Amino acid sequence: MPANNGKRKPRASRLDRMEAILEQMGERGQRTDKRLDRLSEREPRLDERIQATQSVELLSRDLREFRNTTKLTFEDTLESIKRFENIAVIHERRLSRLEDAG
Image 1: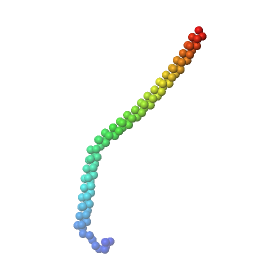
Image 2 (image 1 turned 180 degrees about the vertical axis):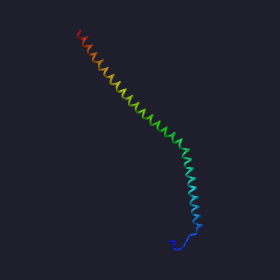
Image 3 (image 1 turned 60 degrees about the vertical axis):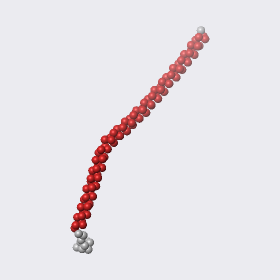
Image 4 (image 1 turned 135 degrees about the vertical axis):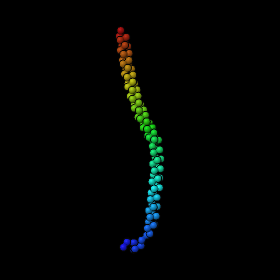
């Protein structure tokens, strides 16, 4: 005997429920297909955004490197100018001593 005390549900109602479930699944599948289509349409735009973002990141990195290089170059130039100034002062003192001695 069946576990439900001999009470059987009519077959038609089970079939109706199964058909309703299958119909719902079909509708969900259609909605999923539509979502996938929309995502496929958006993909090129997303790719463009990703490429733009990567370009901005590369430009930012290049700008930082340029700043650092420029800063080092400026510091090197400033240091060289200071050395030349020291050399000029030393030569001026030497010439003054030679002139005073002569």
